[in-house]
Amino acid sequence: MIQARGLARTFPTKHGEVAAVRGVDLDVAPGEIVGFLGPNGAGKTTTLRMLTTLLAPTAGTATVAGHDLRADPAGVRRRIGYVAQTGGTDPATPVGEELELQARLYGVPGRAERIAKLCARLELDGLAARPSAALSGGQRRRLDIALGLVHRPPLVFLDEPTTGLDPQSRGNLWEHIRRLRDEDGTTVFLTTHYLDEADALCDRLLIIDRGRIVAEGTPDELKRRVSGDVVTLELGAGAERARAALEAHPAVREATADGGTVRLTVDNGDRELMGLVRALDAAGVELTSLRLARPTLDDVFLTVTGRSLREAA
Amino acid sequence: MSQIVRDTYLIFMRHLRPTLRNKVALVFGALQPLLYLLLFGPLLKDVFGGGGSWQVFVPGILIQLVLFGAGFAGFGLIADLRSGVVERLRVTPVSRVALLLGRVLRDTVVLAAQALLLVAAGVALGLRAPVGGVVVGLAFVVTLAVSIASLSYVLAMMTRTEDAFAPLLSTVTLPLMLLGGILLPMSMAPGWLDVLSRFTPFRYLVDATREAFQGHYATAAVGQGAAVALVLLVVSVTLGVRRFRRENA
Image (cartoon, rainbow over all chains, first blue to last red; front, top):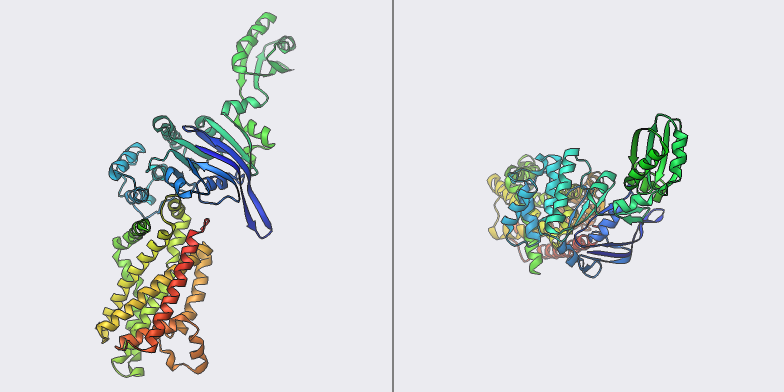
């Protein structure tokens, strides 16, 4: 659905050229939800603006939704939807008018029916006469998304779709985004700097930092790249005996004992847990509690970029 | 081509609808020139002697209406840039030219309606002008409105914030208004001022509209006015179209 090679963009400033994006290669398959993850200023929005024809690349090529970005931007525009971070509605214009205009500009056949269906689906029914200034944050976001979907594009770009929404609206929006993929086979390319969002919503992630893609994979693959899972054991007594017994276990990479606590770094911790407990049992050690912590995407980010996403953002 | 026409109509209607919803705003937009007409116009009676003063004053006020009315058009674009409407529309297949022309057309229609309102007010106050002359005058108004609105949008695209746009706008419009001889004809000016005013386009448009209102059509002033109006139109719309076609506009 998207193939980009060496996509780059520099901006002229008073102090010479600044490279916002320095050669991005990316491939997105049809029907995927792909998350584009990175701190502010990493080049997420610049890349998105290039892929959506809003900004001409200074170098590189891309095919988006079957059309060449440089040679046929109009062809790309007809086949994509784009929902900007700031939205794109006029506060005073009624919801119905915005949708009607958008549908007409795309030449959508069966306009009224399409708009009614979209409104029902995105929980916007009965709001047609209301100006967008009178909508709640979640409603306005869903209106932005409806505007991006009115022509049934096979590919939708969402820039920070849930920024500024309350937790309930976020969860609700995630559901709507999943339904796009599951029911219509729509490919979704979204940017986010929320790790939980990337984790919960995306089939695949691309991590961008300082204008370059530094890692990609499914959330699980990426997490596996980070030093394994952490298993913490609380023991009444015999911590040192437990450590010695577990260190020999093939899945354990590292084991440390501290007072009544043993900390292990384990590959595939969820699968190996049973074996660890058996090894403890064989060594005759009583277990009080056991905790498995999987690495978070923040750990992944820290590993690939050398800084925490939360700090960077 | 048919796409440009269709898209221009869609963008035109989008921007016209708020005006149709709020017709009072239409009158308020013409309030300033209307006040000039009511509170300043009568003073000119003695300067020109009798009813002829309206034939001089109303054309000036019409050009002033366009200069300020169309000049302020850019503010609407800045609001749309900020809310993201411009960007949203630019991702659709809409013709880039239509995004400019639809707006300009709407501004022109509104200004034409306001100009008619001012002419009607002028007639009520004592303006006597031939219908043909008024029609020619309104043609000047419309041509100028298209030009000034286009330029205002170019300026708005370049500045992108009200804070930068507003001072620039008033720096440009006030001297142009004064040098155009809008309140009093430049034929009354001392030599240096008369020469200076000939370097501004409005001088020619105001003079031509005044001639037309007096029923003189085949004169040098009307010819010069028409030529200046057309050159201004071509230059302004070309600049506007180029700016709206540019990728990061």
